[in-house]
Length: 436
Image 1 (cartoon, rainbow, N blue to C red):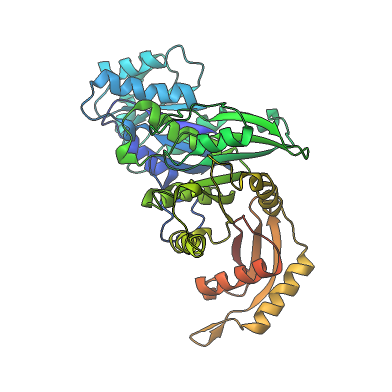
Image 2 (cartoon, helix red, strand yellow; image 1 turned 180 degrees about the horizontal axis):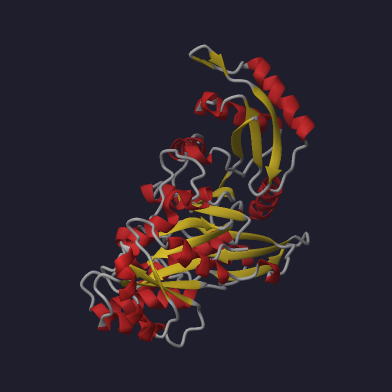
């Protein structure tokens, strides 16, 4: 199930970004703190009361010199179209304004739940000033201080009450995968080539595909898939049209709702910084991943071209060292027939479980090969490990002192697990805990 989406809206200068930062805070899901895994602060993961969700900072969606009403209308349209819950932010310091009423007017008529947060209520004396906001007709106003975190829990308590019921989501045996990448790398062309028909517009104009479009299909072998083609993810500073801003959020939603992600690169233009940014979204989400190099027919090649390009990918995407690479051409359909089997394979690895006995045999062999390090005379002792989750495979390793587990030794243990078991195409997580 895709994570619920919460949009933070309101007129400028009411503290939307401050509240956004406070909500995501230290709860943002960082899988690995490694170079190249950049995170767009416009969209972030958050957690409250065991609910995982995404937060949109519509303060980052303001459109420069555009008229004010156009700005707020664009922000609220994002919320109305895509969010499950809307937090409307007003300023308790400035009081009710005509612009606040304009935002509320835009929210009238939507069927999305709205939680009204009165920000900048930094001391108890200011609480008596919030009652004017009842006139907005959006229910109870909740006083908060984004800068201090006061009252935020009350707002989030109301937010999670409106999340969709997971039990209402129907099970589907089809493998669901999304296709991501920066604009103009040929994602829609790959979709059309796989399906053998023009289901979507294919154009050389960046951003042609606005929405994430689900397409269900079955291979001749009887394997069923649901394919999602997402709009190209663009750099935050280069996203101008509202519709393209929506497309970033829709791509995030598609990644959340996928089991496997195809990360598409352009062989003609090579690897750009934005490619690592886009791949970071899927990596952070813990999804199974395949790197697809498109337009392989369009470049001159010799006997070393493919290996050189693969080496470049491995160098630039160190955090995706587990991802298989396939070189394809949507135009000639070269190697596209490999994609369904690859998707099935990495999805199987993504769902793989290892018995504790087999896991600990590998762990003990690794310790015998490379003894745990010491620090100031104290040696790390690794007692045992167990798998606690799949998608991605997650292991808890119990030790005598968490502080003695150096990152490099943790990577060594992860590599030993990968050497013993086929986890190609999926990240794995090691959680280090101190045995009590």
